[in-house]
Length: 208
Figure 1 (cartoon, one colour):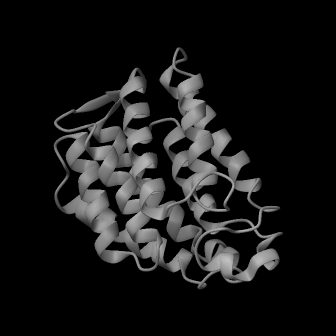
Figure 2 (cartoon, helix red, strand yellow):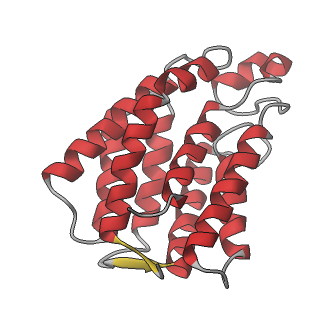
Figure 3 (tube, helix red, strand yellow):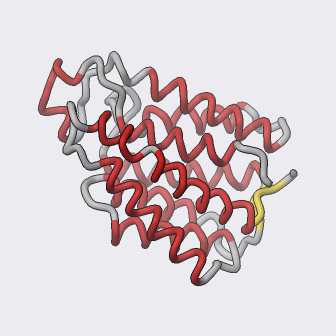
């Protein structure tokens, strides 16, 4: 497949909602020692609302799809995750306005706009034990795979996000509630990086 169609992107998000529901307990367990113990519940609730919105009124283009996701997450997800993920999808949507499919280059542009917005909103940089530690390597992988087939590039991005997720374990948190723990935050995998990886892993799954 040479491009990400609106249907493919919609399917991705519907399946991601199922993934996040199944991962709810795991994400909560990750969040309990370093956060508010609510990341799993918040993400599952937010993407369940996304699923309902997309089924009730399927967007006609990718830009509308991403904006719908953004506004739904912002309005339904508590804590920091709603505004951060919402900002990611909202900024990504600005690069997909009116487009019914995205090439690899166009998706990379959307992803970069989303990550830039998220980092500005959260005032976070790589290495601070946040979702940025999964998303930033994923973006670099997309860029490095610019000449590769789309599916291969998506798989590379998901693999990079997985590596970034695991790499949060030895980090000391510098942002969010986990930062209050200081050195006690070391040794725990960041839940936001984990949910980011789950999203990108699902996108890399073959369409079907």
